[in-house]
Image 1 (tube, rainbow, N blue to C red):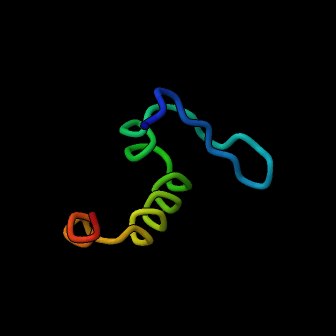
Image 2: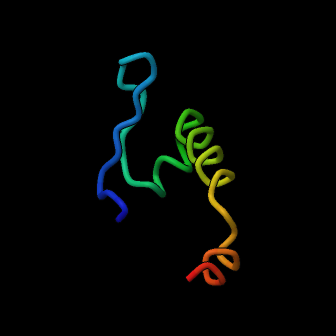
Image 3: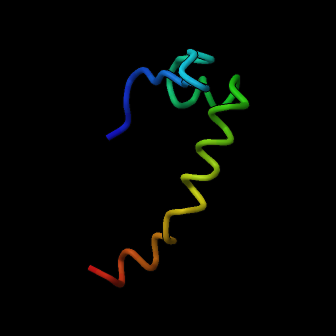
Length: 51
């Protein structure tokens, strides 16, 4: 599910690369993308109830 190596592009240009953990520490672009993704997901409790 998680990639071993992630490439972060901004307007078609490579701006960062690395593991999820590395990018959270070093890339503002990645942190912004991940924060939006994380906010879009329903809480785990809701997922468990849906199953």
